[in-house]
Image (cartoon, rainbow, N blue to C red; front, side, top):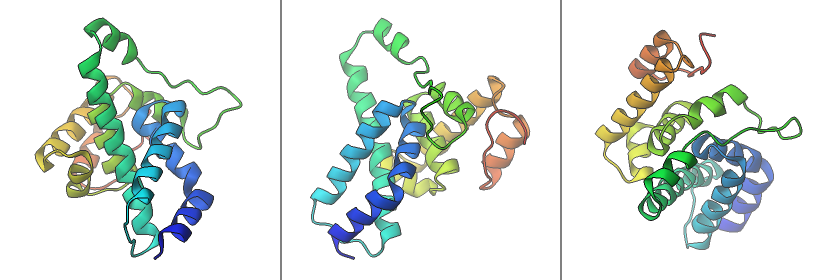
Length: 183
């Protein structure tokens, strides 16, 4: 598949989906749009050949998650502890005119997690990525993906945003994670 048609198709048919995914990963609509832009530029500026449109789409999803984690890691090295505590508070609060095509409760719940926990939970259970693909995208070990995912699900249960039954089922097998209680 040639790069240019894949890029055009991706932007025309999957841009909203990419922004929605990036919003879940970052917790911010503004950051999401920047993440999508940076990921698309990065992926399509290199001489890559994609076997299919889905392959290109998956590659951009991984680039979004890894860019977010890298940016957070860089930011953490630069700012003071007090600034970090203030900035880590949930930031996403869409207005009535702003819809990202997902349950606001899901976005708010994910915003309570650390960046790595959020990235792992989103990639594993909302983007249906394997442990290995998630580890590769984030530059961490398979065990770290499992730990961050488990910790993220446990934090959602502890906060009352997810039931223990749903978290247990998600840990055992791939299930559709419902945040905000049992559904």
